[in-house]
Length: 246
View (cartoon, rainbow, N blue to C red):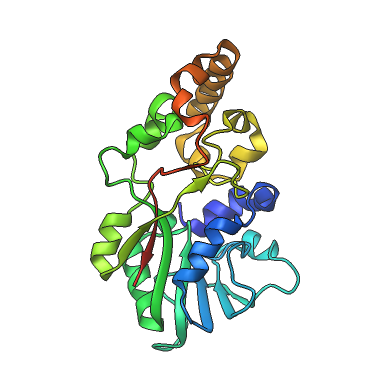
């Protein structure tokens, strides 16, 4: 399924749980450097668009475009692989938690390099063999995710000559992306939280309900806390999230 069709299907309530996490936003905006003009590719509702720069957004999903707030940056209906802009039109191009949905991520990032002098991409590094064991949700409840290519950071960094920066997830992360509730497992029992994350749609209803039942049972029995006692006092977790910066 294309990213446009996916988010036309699941994106109607996206703004309920997906909001800007200021500490992660600060890292993204710092990586943009002194860029004054910024292209946001796969922009969704525009959560991480810097307010103090001249931003143009690209988003293929009409449902997502319709949820952009009043006063948001202008948004063009297009895909990453075919950006409708001239070479070097922008100081920087950014993409936040979207490249894993692109049909051809390498082609999309090369298009970003074509239209901008700097590229900043937020994604997840699943090429690390230890990744599937880092996060209890994939390790203990969703093996379907651990076996899939959810992120491509190492491969993409190599393809476009980018450096990688780790992105830590604060325990009280405001943005409800897949890994955000690593210290708040009860959040994954909330269907609104799950509907704001494409991973749950990707694994299918049977796997989703199996995981929810198991998490609920393990919270009630104390098994989750016993398994994950090392997380309970952490302020931030390293779960494979990365910024790629060229």
